[in-house]
Length: 120
Image 1 (cartoon, rainbow, N blue to C red):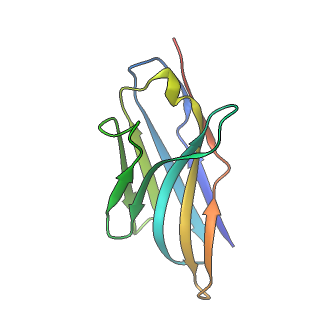
Image 2 (image 1 turned 90 degrees about the vertical axis):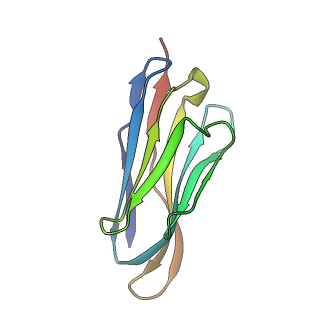
């Protein structure tokens, strides 16, 4: 079984920065793609950024030039550096991984989320 655990959320003032981390553990053979999604109160979950095993990245227009996604394949970790944060970035941020297990099965796994609040 695979687990994804996020960390690094918190309260930050507008214009500030936060770095989210997500650690994947369990019976993992490879993680084909990893990403961050977010869900604000009363809204649907939306894509923030994704990164492939080869390092290709994709960002939501709303976070381009402010957020940077990266990963450490050896440690099965993905990061999200968030700069110039705005109140509208307030949401629960979820880590996602498309994982091939050691038995060869494919799964789309989610963490439980970490709260990011941007407020003065």
